[in-house]
Image (cartoon, rainbow, N blue to C red; front, side, top):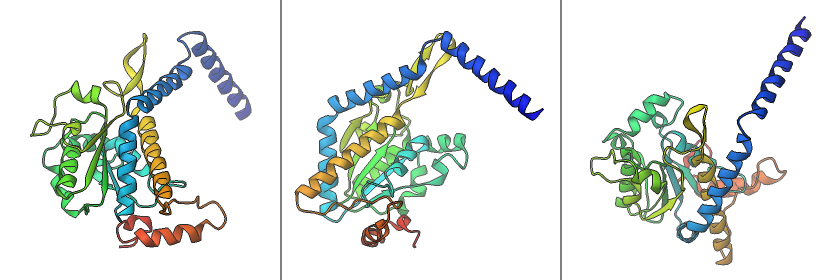
Length: 273
């Protein structure tokens, strides 16, 4: 009886899949096409700024600094994408403020990101050095918390890079008391070219745009910048501090040596206080 029920279920799924393929176009292909277009556009239009960012990262690491990253909501995912990453830079510190993430309440996190003054509840606990590079990620660029993080890091002497969508930001008023948006307060802007609202696709039977872009493009932007920084370090005679995958035999010794170098500034690397 169970097997018969499963057979019926799979037949229903197959019929549903066939009905989708007959009607509204190939949205799978459309999404991949749109993402490829965006990444190509970013490579072309943002190439010089990506290189500037890579130079700043390389110089920061040469001078003993680290790379710090901050984002609210889904933007915080990008701060973790490049943290403790096989093939990635070791001296990378995500600024993880749990109420601004999603697991303690998604709607609440959005409400707090929009709250002027909220950043003051956690910024005094953050340590920014003059040698550091700080990435602040916000696709809309309009909310107070990312703006305040950028302003605070700049006040401490760090070099601040904003990853945002200029098209999106310029279509919406700032929610910050200064009237400023992220791209107006940072040292360097990298445009992720997300459309207003972030979603890439439309369909006549779907009332709103769907299929977001900024996580895919944000990951590409950060990894491209770090890749260029690795080569710049190597070509200047500095060993790039890059993680080996922990699933490769013998990697632990290599990784432990690098973690020991940055443990004090980045306690999250091994959970020490």
